[in-house]
Length: 128
Image (cartoon, rainbow, N blue to C red; front, side, top):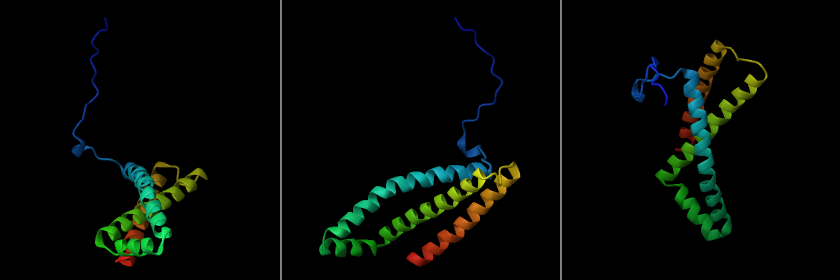
């Protein structure tokens, strides 16, 4: 029979009180953007296939893509792509040995978020 161990580690199950560092936030967003891209790829391939089937399919897809929900979905997919691309470039730079320190990681995370926000806003202006 096992003895009960007195565990002195703190247990925090309230997710609202957990504060992630900025490097954790960028890592989390990188993974979420990858999932969005994976799921969105199926949708976009279906739309592409439908638009290439016939002239009627093209007209239907064109009409659908001018609606507000479709523009919002397109903006979301392009935003995920931009963030994932920029964070991926950061990973490649880190593979070369640049920005591997704790302070370099924080600075790189701030740069990723800044560049991504600017590009996402510009894409939103372009779509609408």
